[in-house]
Length: 65
Image (cartoon, rainbow, N blue to C red; front, side, top):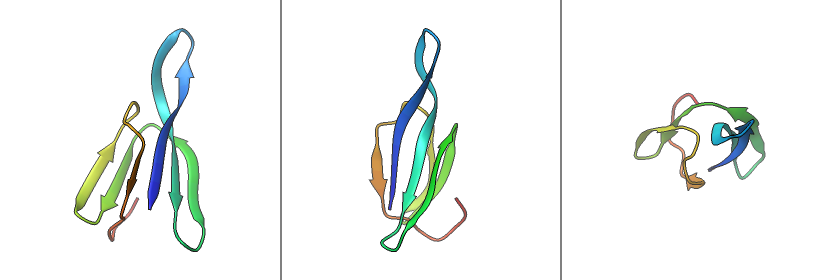
């Protein structure tokens, strides 16, 4: 499963330029870093995620993150 949330803003511009990408499995946390874009293989297809997206939790499919 993956949880994504907006975290970074720049100066007076309140638009996020990156977001915190956290990838967690039942066994351990695999990723926890700021990114500007994430291409995520979901169980029902590839999902592109950019800043300002609402937080989400998805079931991962096979593929590269």
